[in-house]
Image 1: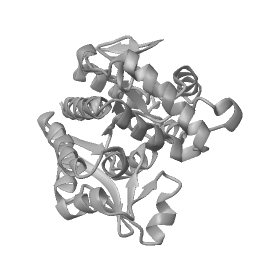
Image 2: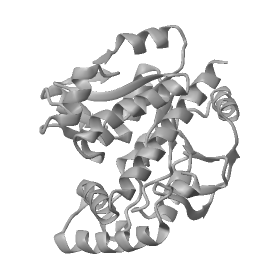
Image 3: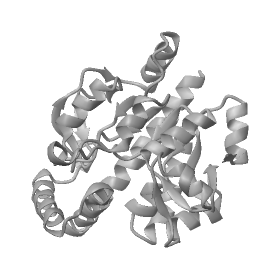
Length: 300
């Protein structure tokens, strides 16, 4: 069921470094028409880290691991692109749909293709109203059962971060900070919560991945939390004001479930004068490059 791009297939066959990239950020997370150029910059960041990028998406019913220019353009510009989590992927594929893969779907497909490293922006997690709604991202359950290393800027700052950290622990998903002992919060460098482990180099992360395999503990994900440098984060006061207003708007308009995250991110983009977009792009590029460097270290 997987169509692996020739460059990606050749790299995997030769044991070279490959990094998976999600496509939801291209279709739903970045504004048009900038999303095409930014998607290419993300792939370039992986190459700058020494690895081959493999953006994953569903194109006309075919799961692609690595996108050529027409496929990337389709994901970025078509109006019929559906958001596919892991549970949606077989239905969408069987119906011949075109879809952008979330963290859950991307991690699954990457693992199926034999890719160990995956770079994204921020993970999904436990929503703030989950005590009443049980709203929790499928990313967490997928990472609990998928052999993958995810480089991210923590979880999205619109979520319930302490509850998400508790769920990651319960699900046996390893979490370590890259050159920090503080958990980042997507747009923000520091969520205010401590991490149990700090890893200071791509080689150290590669050593951890090797140890997981040797111990038979690589059936779940390892999350590497890579924070934005403090000067590049979104202004925390602005973040708090926009978040409060956005949550109130979501409640007033009855926005629920999978629609909450894109709604809030759109409000952030409008309410911060584009500053949230700048931070989003910066953190994704940094994560893509770091994932490339880790993938290279794994081959050493």
